[in-house]
Amino acid sequence: MRGKAPLAALQVPLMSAPPLTGLAAAAALVDLAANRLWLRGAAGNMSHATLVEISRWGGLVRNCAAIFGFVALCFALVQFLRPRGYAPVLRRIGIAAMAGVFLPTVALATLLPMERTSPPTVLCATGAASTLVVLLGLTALRWRPPSSLRVAMGAVSASALLAFCALAVALFGPMLRWSHSYVVASSLRRAGEFAYLVLPIAIAATMVKERSPRTTLKTLVAVVAGATVGVSVYFASLELGRDFSSVFYGALRLELFLDAAPGLYAIPVGLMVAVAGVGFGSPVAATRQAAAAVVLFLAAGYAPSSVGVLMMMVLGASVLARAAIAHAVIRSVENLPPRSG
Image 1 (tube, rainbow, N blue to C red):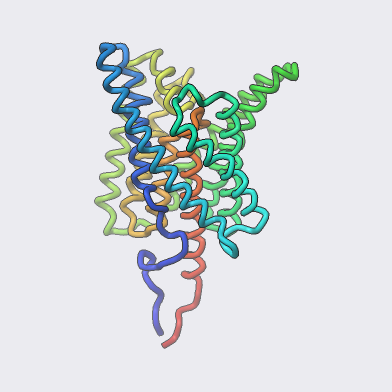
Image 2 (cartoon, helix red, strand yellow):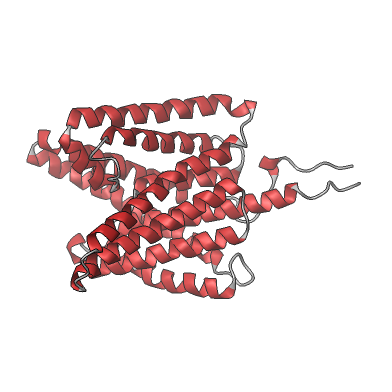
């Protein structure tokens, strides 16, 4: 009897991340830490000349993230559009249509000055991005991946859909003189944020199933890194006081706990960092791809309001969908009876 190949040695479709995904995730994470968190929090203690110089370098990081992310997203979406590929015909048509709206918008927003990106453009890009995330989630769920990845894909899809619905209600409700628009929009937004915070927990469950003695040290390092980031966020909430809410919301657009206990956000942020670190240490390429998705979702935050950050959300969804499909194929291969020979 000939046994099955080890999990790390299996070569299945969509096993590896698209080209430049790692660079896009790294640049997006630096953009989050430097431009959207540290620079906003420390701006009051810097001179104008220093702020201008740092902003120039920050713009370079942001542009690198946009270029790397655009290339990676094009490669990722093309594989979902192949005939006899991973999605049925109607879903491929939907993905192609939304990509045809979203990708040119991203290209124009990257190449043109920021002031040329109008609010209607951002609204159109948000709708296309949210639809893409939902379509990618439905495509991955069709393959019946492991339950933890099903929860993760469902959470990502629900988060994007609820955030866009909240935005639409907040914009058009007052125009239609709907008295309950604010309450409905707030409820939808909070439900979407809850779904966003479920993501790292679901992916962590996937990685727990793959633990092995060879990855114990890497796991320990990742947990320490996550704990360090979490503690840093907690002490930043104490140090900045009321300013922490504006800085943190401006960076990640999370608000569920900001009024009552902003320090609680140390837990999901630290967990995301730990889960990503554990995933990158996995011998399975599909799990490393899921870890890249966690980094992209952390860098994008919840309900992004700029086109470049929206792209990180869509790229994260496409990478996570690829990882879910790869894990589904791996599971089907593992369930095959061993071949005789």
